[in-house]
Amino acid sequence: MLSKIRLAALLVLSAGSLAVAAEPEDFLDDPDESLEAKRCVSLSRIQSTDVLDDRNIIFYMRGGDIYRNVLPHRCSGLRRRDAFMYRTSMSQLCNVDIITVLESVVVGFTPGASCGLGMFYPVTEAQVKGLKEEVERARKLDLDVPE
Image (cartoon, rainbow, N blue to C red):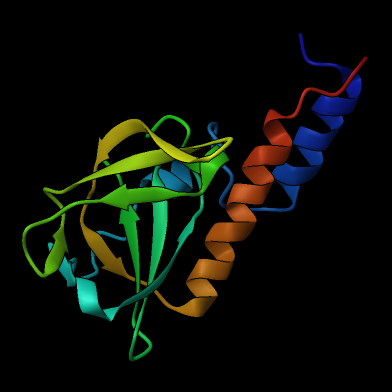
């Protein structure tokens, strides 16, 4: 049973957002299918990445392009670690490639869960900001508030 505080927070957050569904992360799971998704991005153009949660990674590219990759399945530990590696024999990172979460240990990193990438959807900086706000909202809803 939800505590009164958590229920009140849920109601306030739901009232403040017209896009809130039964599951707060639904928005994060469903990319805009009307956008022309790419199967691959050039490795040499990847400038940086930003892990939003266990299914969403933002790829910032040289030249200003931004892509959102929605993994087909949750990748355990990805959000918590915010670090991953990939191996490819091509000059591109594609939706058929596998990433591996990097777990930090005392003297470096050790491989964690391995997960497949999804399609690369073009997004704007404003859309990234909205996605980050949605992630934060979902995290707040998952917090257990002591009764």
